[in-house]
Image (tube, rainbow, N blue to C red; front, side, top):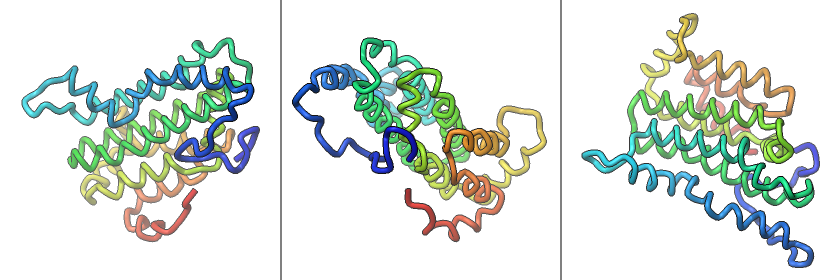
Length: 231
């Protein structure tokens, strides 16, 4: 990983406590994150179900994906306003916390696709991951957003989630995606992935997006890549 985060930045959790001495600004900022815990995937489902009571008392997966996208956008694009008084050093543990929240959301999408195993859910799940990837890619417009994005340098959590979803799809589902190429509509997936791959090169993101693209073009490659990148 490049930048101030160092190669040892955690991908999944905050593993070490922050020092007590002089850490009050850090702890106040982290305490401010407490109300945002409802944006993690498990709590998102609870809140969405409360707002969407249907016959089965469960929120549609695509609505849950929209909640997840909105949460990531809030973390990166809006939350910095609450931290305007923090200097860059004080914002580092907050950025780490936000990055971990976003990683958990990304990892939650393949899980939700398993719970709603149908072609539209798989497709919407991939689109949601693309959208989250775009939000992360463009996170550098604020100091906090730039720090959050730094935690995604050199890791493949987004690509792994996409490949997990593709692995749940039937050959017929993948063929539908392939056959959309060249059509002028918003449901073309491969061009979106190619844009993420190309633009990601400029900020050291999505080094393994080619594996996702290859898997959509030739699903048999999924087995070849099963023991691939573990970052």
